[in-house]
Length: 91
Image (cartoon, rainbow, N blue to C red):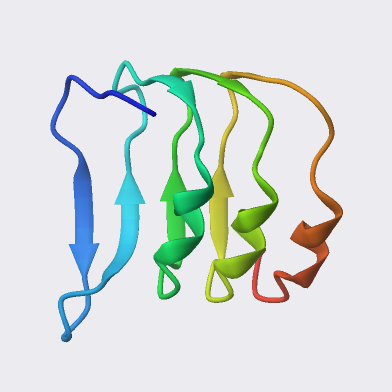
C-alpha cells in the first residue's frame, strides 16, 4: 500500500468523483495496488518522481476514461501490462 507525506492535488467532477489525481513528487513509496482500477472516471494520473516499486497492476485497464498517465521516475519493474492497450483515450 502506498503512503504519501505531501498533500495530493485532486480534481473532482460535478458528482464528486475523482477525475484528476496528481501525486507528483509526493514522496510515495510501496507498490501500486489493484484498487487503482476503482476510480473509473479518472482522466489524469500523475504519480511521477516517487519511490513506487513493483509491477504496474493489470487493473489499470479499468481506468477507461484515462487520457494522461505519468508513472516516470519511479522504481517500477516488469513489463507494461498488455491490458493497457484497452485504454483507447490515452494520449
